[in-house]
Picture 1 (tube, rainbow, N blue to C red):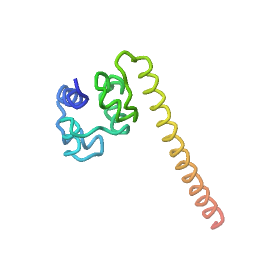
Picture 2: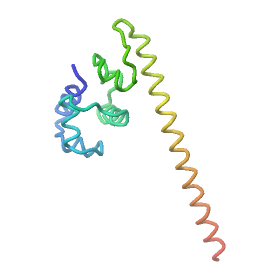
Picture 3: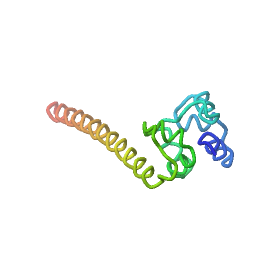
Picture 4: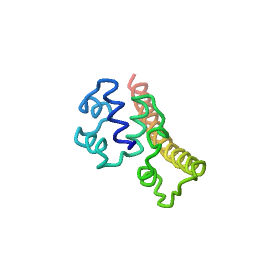
Length: 127
């Protein structure tokens, strides 16, 4: 079963329409429609949102959909019967992506901390 059909079935099983799910995912309804129809590949961020919303693993979403796996990993040489290797590649890719996101978030937190400290200094000097 394709990832689009899985998302559609998950959505319908919880009686959520496309508009509601697209709002939860912060994407256009038309984009979700294309994902469900298999015309658009979901991004890693969208996969993470779907995984969180429906409490399913990204591995399960990608299972049996080699085209999606190839696009996400950028690996066009996936061969049937290499499930362990494929799982490791997927895990490595996801870990790399998460580390990059953590780095960005840490940078944003540092910026906010600096802004807060400046405000505290301004307020304490103003008294």
